[in-house]
Amino acid sequence: MSAAVARRPAAGDVVHPRVWTKFVAETLLPTKLGKFRLRGYRHTVDGGLTYTEPSVIISGSPEGCADVPVRVHDACFTSEVLGSLKCDCREQLELAMEYIRDKPPGMVVYLQQEGRGIGLANKIAAYALQEKGLDTVDANRALGLPDDCREYSAVAHILEDLGVSSIQLMTNNPRKISELSAMGIPVSGRIPCQVPAQKYNAGYLSSKHRRMAHLLNPAMYSSADEAEAEQEPLEGQFCYWDHEGEPSSAGIPLEAPVSLPDGLEAASSSIPSSSGSSSEGGSDHSPPPPGSCGSGSSVGASAA
Ligand SMILES: Nc1nc2c(ncn2[C@@H]2O[C@H](COP(=O)(O)OP(=O)(O)OP(=O)(O)O)[C@@H](O)[C@H]2O)c(=O)[nH]1
Image (cartoon, rainbow, N blue to C red; front, side):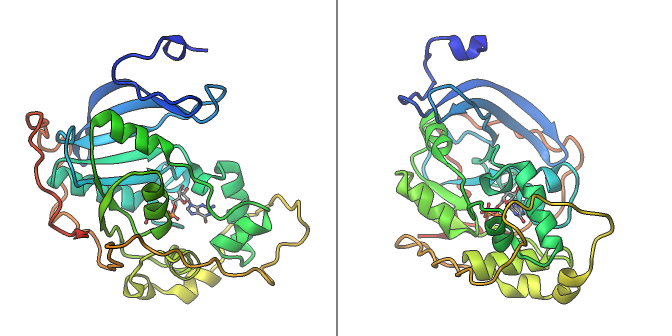
C-alpha cells in the first residue's frame, strides 16, 4: 500500500465507504494541442483492494461552474498509443481536447476502462474474433463478456471535487448519458463528438450506430468504403481465446435501445473541429481567474 493510499483523507478528497476517489496531484502539461491542466486521482470500488487512476485534462477553470463541457473518455491503447485505425477513440479524444482548448472551461475525464471495460487482453481477443467476421458487439458476447461494463463513479467524485454542478456531455453514446444521469450527475446538454470515418473503422461506427444506438450520422461513416473495410483482411496471424467453442453470432438478440433522458436531443452533427491546429507548445492556456465560468456551452452544443 502506498503512502498516498495510507494517508488520512484530506481536504479535496471525495470519499465514500467502499467507492471513493482521491485527488493526488495537478500539473500543467504542454501537448501538441496546447497546454492543459492535468489532475491525477486514485479510484477504488472495493474499499482499496484495487485501484485505477483516473485523470482529468482541464482547460480553464471549471471549478464552481455549471454546464461545463465534459468528455468522459475511456482508454484505448490500440488507437491512442499504437495508432490503430480500427476505431475512432483517438480522434474523439483529440477533438474533445481541441474543443475545450478553444472554449474553456472544459474537461476530459480519462478513465482506465480499456475495451468498454473488458480490459486490453479481452479486447485483443474480441478483435481477433472480429477478424473472423463478428462485429464489435457479437465479438464480446462470443467471449462471454458484456457489451459494456464501464463504471463511472469516479466521474461523479471528480465533478464533486471540482465543484462542477452540471455538465454538457461530449458524447454520441446514449448509455453514457443514462449512466451518468442515473448517478445523479446533472447532464444539462449533449455535445456530439463524431469524427469522419475511414475504411478501417466504418464498419465499427456502423455497428455502434446499429447495435448500440450511438447517435451517429450515417453520412459520416457511409462515405467511407464500408464494404471494403469489413472484408479486407489485415495481414498477420491471429489466435483467440476460444473458451466457448466456435464463435457465432447466431441467435444473439439486438440490445434494447436506450432512451435519452428528457430534454436531450438526439443530434447527429459533430463538434466543430478547430479551424487550425495550434502549433507545438500552442498558446498558453493559463486558467482564467477562479469563478469565471466562461461560456463554451453554445457553440456546437445541443443543450437541453
Ligand atoms: N470491446 C471492445 N472495445 C472497443 C472496441 N473498439 C474500441 N473499444 C473500446 O471502446 C471504448 C470507447 O467506447 P465506444 O463505444 O467507442 O464509445 P463511447 O465512449 O461509448 O461513446 P462516445 O462517448 O460517443 O465516444 C474504449 O475503451 C475502447 O478501448 C472493440 O471493438 N471492442
